[in-house]
Length: 186
Image: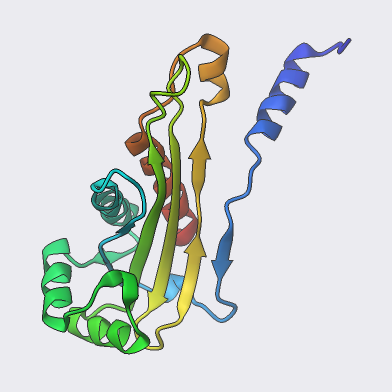
């Protein structure tokens, strides 16, 4: 039996939170030098067809709140995409360069919603599942500077301990994106 139950509990909590978000940073990327960006519409690979739009808006807001980026307004991005007649899910390097020039940005944020579910149908305690794919692409070279695949699944330990449900998928997405943006602007 452990003589220090509080220490054992804290250690267990710390280890339970240790998961790894797969991340990539291009070896020669100067992420701190990127100041002007645009967020393209997200690809939605889930049944909730509005999930991509929700997550795109969350990323837009978190980038603004970070103070690390000047972010092009979503309406301007949509107009540029229409003029270029391109689908964000199938951009070519030339499309990326052309959009960068038209929007006057150094990088584009692209993404996909891979999982997005409040988990209300599985058991007595709601357990949201969210998995995103986020990328920052340089508009001069069409090179991926940064990529991350954050995810969250299930109910946090405190929710299981006290029998309360997890956050909705939108709150889980906010937290995931906030963490990723904070890492970018460090």
